[in-house]
Length: 175
Ligand SMILES: [Zn+2]
Ligand SMILES: [Zn+2]
Image 1: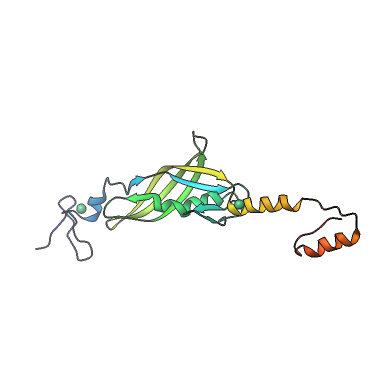
Image 2: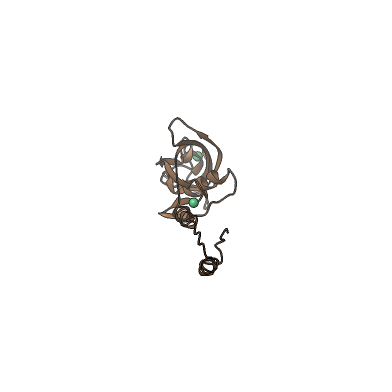
């Protein structure tokens, strides 16, 4: 005799076994896929819009204002802990607003996944912390720039020619 779900009466099948005595539909009812979320912190370079991930600077993901959205989309899944028996498959971000705190954003996130075998789509408002700084590369460029604007004003034309020759080809000297 085959087992059935006591809540809805559905018979157990090979592809839809009862879990804890219930079918996957009834089991996932009233369950939230997201168990835990620790606010994601994103660190962005204010000059080139690259972002920090695992202590490494990565190139920006987009050329326009969708950059922050793309970065959040990429980094957020690691911060989302699903409940037991659930899997988060994908996230999409419908909006990002500034929230109360100075560096705080509030993202409207849709989480797609499964609780046991049931497809789930869940909306959440999640806090994101955004920090703006300058990346290593831009910092380096900045210091090179200052080196480059040191002016050389030799009175002797030969000396000027020598200095010009001595410099790398990508450096342009103003006479
Ligand atoms: Zn059921
Ligand atoms: Zn930068």
